[in-house]
Structures are given as structure tokens and as C-alpha cells.
Image (tube, rainbow, N blue to C red; front, side, top):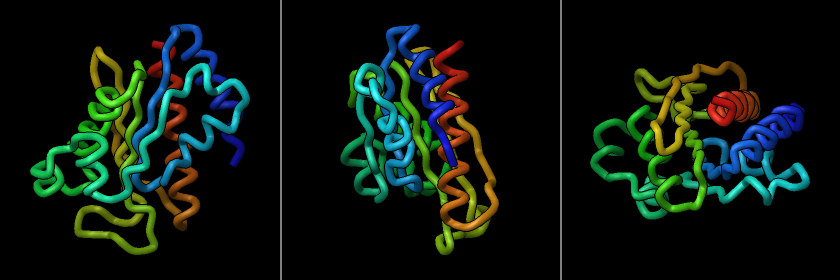
Length: 159
């Protein structure tokens, strides 16, 4: 999948606002950050990425409350929103994205089948979240997540 056009659109929108981006990624393992930084000039708008694959890393690097993880699980709207808050608090970015999901082939639990992904994104004015249910194998779920994340970030940066 070629994410370069979306990344270039995101870059233009962020630069127009003088904003920088931080990502906090679980199931994508840094693929959003990799897509962003694959484009020359990304140091002007990509501030940092957190790969918080384990619950412990979500707690230690982003300040996600252990009680949230216990009550809702890592793949939840509540945790995705907390990851965005943590990415904003632990960076110099004005816009942050969080991704947490079940890419498969294992890991499904009742109510959260393989392909369940929570995206959250936001800035100082608020955080939005969206549940995705993606089809396909692990690579397809991860690629679909990156594409959806970039689209939401472009919207956010332009609004």
C-alpha cells in the first residue's frame, strides 16, 4: 500500500498550522510513524512516536492508568483516548494519534474479534475516537489501520 500521498497531504495540513504530530501505537508497531518519516522533510512536522505494545509500556511511557487497562482492556476506546492524552503530555506535539487493536491471527476475546482496532486522535481542544472492524490477515489489518489513521489525521489537521 502506498501511503505517500496521504502522508504528503498530512504534512501540508500540519505545516500550514505550524503543528507537529506524535503517534502512540500498539498493534501497528510504529507503522504510522514509519509511514510519516518515510517522506523527506518529516522532521519539520513529525515530533515523535511511541511504540507501546505492552500494557506496561502504555503505563510507563504514556501514563495510562492501570485501572483503565484492567477495566476495559488495552483494545478499548478508553485506553485509546488515554494514549492520546499521554502522547500529547509527553511530547511537544499539538496533534496526537493512538492506535490499539487486535491484528491477529490470535488475540481475539469475546466482543473483540481479530480486526478490532480503536483509533483516537486529538489536540488541546478535544479527542475523537473510532472503532474499526477490519478484515483480512495481520498485514491487511495493520495496513488498513495505517490508512484510516492517516485519513483521520488529515481531517483533524485541516479542521
